[in-house]
Length: 504
Image (cartoon, rainbow, N blue to C red; front, side):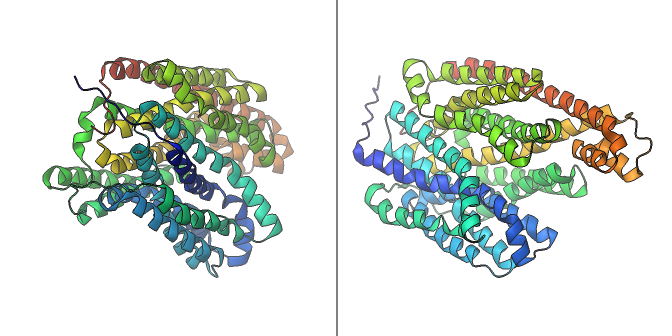
């Protein structure tokens, strides 16, 4: 019997973790910080409607598309090297974005930012795997890693608002430059280098297939969320699925695959990756509906709704460091199952909610419940992979999260819309112009607009709010059932799986 005597991390590793947290925080800030700059940016650059959408979306598309490529490059060329190259490119692209003179220049700069941003998550997570070999310390470090993303998402809008108020829209991009300069200075001093000593040459055909497959799927899902199922949605999703099949067949045939499919033979790896993706699916999907409920049903202004959405995000952030302590006292599978069950309770409360405080309480329960789920599934994914494959394992975890979040918004949004339209099909619309009547029966936002333009439509708005609330509740109960089943699956499968150390 072999006893694992993984060395415990010292001061150097913990300071290095603080350095790794900085780019993670910036990564998530860049996903949200632009939103407040859109009005001023639009007045300055005058983009078309299509260009404005690309300015907003291109960063996320590029991040999702390049995650697995960058994770594989990190395993082959060195994780610290890829991280530092990405940091330098991120800083340079931030300057280009800040001083863009046309919409086309800003789109190009945002695309480069996304490609550089794709180096951050897999490189930082795989470096944590190399730096923290003790399982308890690694769980705590991953919790801090997750917390850094949450903090970035929380402070992004606030920082963006302050910068725009006192400077100009380009300042939201320049805010990240000092962080990247600091990473470039401290990284070589505090972060270890690691790469797979036996890695073969990267297969560029596999890299292109991976990029095309993920971009097609992400684009199709986002288009589905924006406009529904149409020819463009089906074409993108069909092309993405076909490319996935071609990619997987190529990975089985070639000597040095981009993704080692042998990882999926581990039940621990496969189920943890699935649980992580499903958790993000429901977390992102329900977050959109909460914002709509607060504004369209309860009538809050956007800022007020945003402030009431914060408690759940704050709870998620503050609960992260306690995951490791729980995992030290109880088996990790039990902690993860308990988190899923707490999220189930939160969704049940949300399914019964009839006002503000019930929704806020449900959000807090869901946030606290999902915290150990996200931290421990991420730990299971990178822990089940050999240390030389940690980069691609980390990238697969992040890619699953990207796909889970986008799909959750699309699928749950489609479900909620379908229920709303079914409830509103026979709603009285007499006296309303046809366009307003059609809009009111299609979405609650349309019913709000109809009531603002035609005071007699107040009754229709009340019916629309009731229909939306019913659809919202039904979606929450569906999430509760799905997560309860997932908790039982986790308890049954992972309890019987033999954990493997990261360095096996």
